[in-house]
Image (cartoon, rainbow, N blue to C red; front, side, top):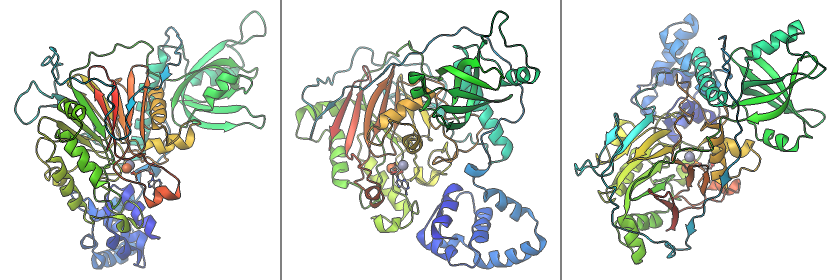
Length: 574
Ligand code: D5M
Ligand code: FE
Ligand code: ZN
């Protein structure tokens, strides 16, 4: 077993591992069994596997007896854990009948635009006016039943935060097959409901029955065929020999083929963006033998065209991510300049005024660089111990003024399980920080005094860049707009994102947020889709060795600041 596989096996299971521990396992004669043994015996409170967690004598004695007996609770447990969640199952429904729902259809037209934001080359753009006085709406609060947090000065009229959705303490899955079936049924049910209001879809089973009996779908007068609509999860996308697109859609009653003709230019272009495991609606006509639908219209869950825009609130929120504290490419000087700005310590008067308005600092993952995230990472670290990395982070955040409420969610470099949705940091880490900081999971929907922000680290952007034409690392907001159109944060299953099969699909965008905030790809992107502001908040890490190799050019030390009453965005450079 190679070093990288040892590391990957632990990452998949939700643990980080020190390079010394990787070496120790890799040098053993049965590394694979040793990995399973460790995973089967590790205490749940451990987040980073160190040498002291590897009990080779016990493994060797148990392994030799285990091989003879080939049974026992420990080996059962480890065999379960040794099948990482991302590989346990294919997207599938199992057998559950689906009731067709009949409802009127309507069009969704595209409404996508790039937000204009003021960008200044070194500091703040003087064209924008800022006010440090608070509007009269100050203090009027949305009613909230759970998860209310207020800042530590005890004034509950200031900086109310309501955590509306977060996996923390709610995870139930262990990665069994039936959990995947349930997970995909839940995804299908939620997303198909969004489409059902716009087309009259029938269960796929009814099309297959008609095909068998060769009747039922022909119109009485003439050779034309009825228009049919189905809603399904995309289980296959391929190009035919003639250059058309062939899709396979699956609903809980069966699966069906759909052909998108390349002569239908607009439709074909839409179809070229279809990705595996997303849920779409198709309207089209059946071929003579009833085996195929020729698509005429493609319907995504999408955001409604007219949605009520919430009123907003006073003040500003700062969005950032991918700080990567501990990395040797962490831009400490620029980061400290940012902390100075938050403290109103800067030469530019407008910047000073602006900083007075800031109420929230939102961080969407990769707070630290972590350890054992990729092979050879130890050569790119300034702080080699993960807890020391978090202690350093805590020190930085203690410098943020108390009137700014800080909210932090994890990313793939942080010390929580790698499978998403990720819970908030464990107590051992949160206890390093001041009590006033709010830790949430990934993704999480938080209400910042009436402005709803959906935070998601954004690992799925890697998948979207690879799969959707026109989406690139240089414009991450386009990937985020694709998420909004699909009403799903991580549609493709089984690629970069390891999805834990929770009962509910936490990636479905149920509640339409005011702001979708991601990070991960280390490039700034700001866009708007319908009423939603999409922000990718870049990084505080300069180009890494890996990024050099793949020509990924980060845009570090830039910070989007959003006016919470208008959602206008300003980009600051540090
Ligand atoms: O990810 C930062 C960006 O770099 C993100 O787009 C993934 C990409 N990246 C970084 N390291 C790797 C490796 N080893 N394989 C593939 N892609 C990678 P971050 O989460 O900050 O590392
Ligand atoms: Fe990152
Ligand atoms: Zn990341």
